[in-house]
Length: 401
Image 1: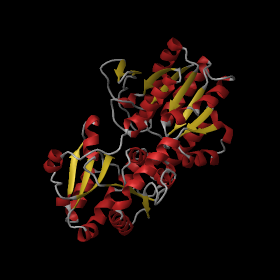
Image 2 (image 1 turned 90 degrees about the vertical axis):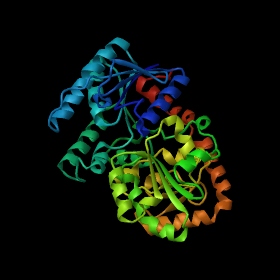
Image 3 (image 1 turned 30 degrees about the horizontal axis):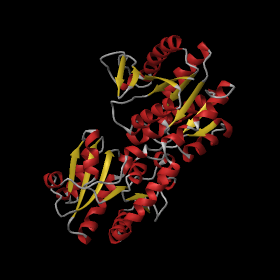
Image 4 (image 1 turned 135 degrees about the vertical axis):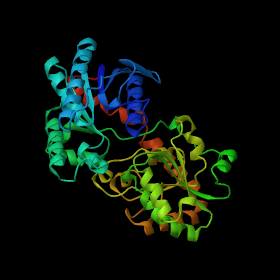
């Protein structure tokens, strides 16, 4: 079976989107399928039309000249459509597999219909909800409603729909898509790549000023929806109860400037360490410095519907964490067993949950073992990717190769 994946962006860019994509592609190849990979113009300007990264070959799409909003998105889709049609005519895939956003699904549908190739669409989040968080659209505003209508239009026309969690599946079914045409391919991890937590590097700990400290931490991209501002607001109460407490924030992103300003405003800037982005191969060393991970996501449509990767990665490493009780976390975390949930949006609830977990250190090994067991039994990429087989078979009208 030959599958041509159409992606928004890919490695070497780092994001939950690119890591999931790479894992899916490798696991599909392990099943014996041939996979081909095309990224949209949103990958950015690339030195070559074809790029090999970590053993995967990515075809790139030229970036069109900028245009005003609306016209720019049309240009992106036209550029992707031209590149996809030429590539599909050359490779002759059995399936076109478009991944969100809808800017990839529409070109795939147009090319698929012209060339007679089935099209499937995988939704990882709805574009309109991400736009609200990024500040480029207003909830239920004209652009939001237009984008939502476009997503629904594409969902009705593709041959099958994949999504990453039950929250998104419920939203897709509510749009009138038949249940038998929607398959969940849940986020997962390669357990072999995530071993139990190691010993902290004393030199790195000293360099970051964390000697003798209780370290709360977050590793990832700093978006507003991650709720790191809530962690800042909980810090004064936490420091009063735990004077040696520090916060380690590893990564970067659009919210970093606001977080730095908020830490200064609250008088806790000296207790927060911003490392900036670190090489992927070095991330484990920073994880090992953290006593308790914090995932304080705010409640909004995006976080209520979408399951994140970070708690799964933490569980695979037998690490202990607290997380807000948004829907995406509730779908993953067994409260009091694999992690501790607290009321989203409440600095006091966050402080209370952290205080409770610090008082239960003797139970941390049990939390770690339970989390690792959950991942091994239910959230490996091999188990997730196996769910493509019957859906692909249905699209092709016979047993999947």
